[in-house]
Image (cartoon, rainbow, N blue to C red):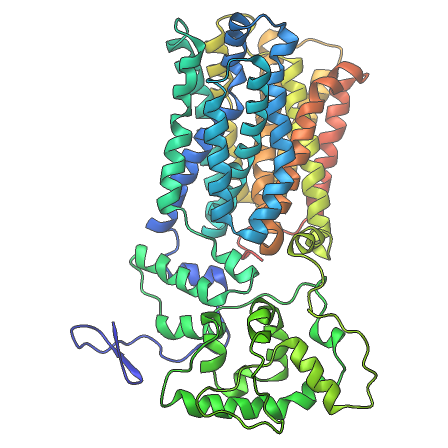
Length: 588
């Protein structure tokens, strides 16, 4: 497409019939992604990358299933010491969850996921190269630290790019690849059972393959750009998605990138961020409006003859917007966060001329939009009767990391945080408690037991996405928890139903608990807003890992432990109804 005056024509001279005027109300990200092709080739490519990543993550996490007996043969250690290779991984995984979550929300999904994948590859493969058992434990800890960053990063990216009806399906596919990693571990462990244990390093091939693919094909999240107030980058990425999916957007993409706020709905300022009105005199907006409109007139006249020089390309939409849209008081409040990003650049211009002052306005450069501190100074100069108090130099006095943490405890998000973390803890404790109490295969070959344990989980993954898309997230989560409660109650009774029926009840409890745990990731992705989604999901996962670590201890030390599991899962079933239904609802 080429631009010809105010109209657009295709390269063959055909008139472009797309809308040239911005919509009356901006579109949500979900609507724009539907315009860009919905679940197209772009989304399927990310799904394939995530599936490969989950295969790599599962291989690293579940490695002790086949590595422990080989370590016992290679080193003069006890069985209790050999268990440390699993415990060290989970310790690193648990430590990394909140850290990677905060970094992902503040620095971006793509760079943090790549960094985590690098750590997973280096230390995951390094386990097979170090000569001492203590070094193996240290490398396993660091491998777990990196693995959780990959797990969370790709999961959040996929959840943010696919529609509501596909999120549960995608999580089920990932869970199947996770179980598949255990089956592949069993197969290669058996295949390499007669060679040196260090040859098991070939199991790290999926991790390195995932790293290479991510470098070239892993995108950033549109939701991240919107949450960090980068609308031009978000619109540019949506345009790229539309190009890959071969689905032209129903409006002029060039104008949408230059004026993204006319096309892309931006979130409101978070409650914990001090607003402009809260940190400036109440008369600031009314006093500045005439001066800002004067600046708008200069810019508007300038842009008709030449392209306005920009301090930052993200300011293009403000320079090219009409005065009524760009400089209305409510627009100032909406823009104050973005101004923080370029505040230092603007303050470095000591020769900047503010409209309405005695200084002359240069005809060579249009007057820059005043930053928030400069607007405060101007307001004080216009109102000499106002006492010049020590005002903060920036409207956001808290750091981005602290802002992410506080977002979990605001308004409705507080309920989501409480329910997701408690449910993750309780349902995962139930899963590992039942698994610790019962066995699917008594004795038998190690590799057959491992493969069978993974295979029986796949029906639970399928049931999860079918129920979640049919009955809704809340009802499905509650139903899975109630199945766990009923199964554990039956197992707690001092009666035997026969070996076959006892195993069937235990299997139902395990599959239901696993389905409920997987569905909680979807609920968390849809319940947390973009500015804290990654951190919120990781907090829930961390609570689940604490439950996994305490499961065996809980079963050994608690009287009527199985009955207690029934009570815990009942609380999960009831707490699910305190959440809002998110099936078919756009991400926040």
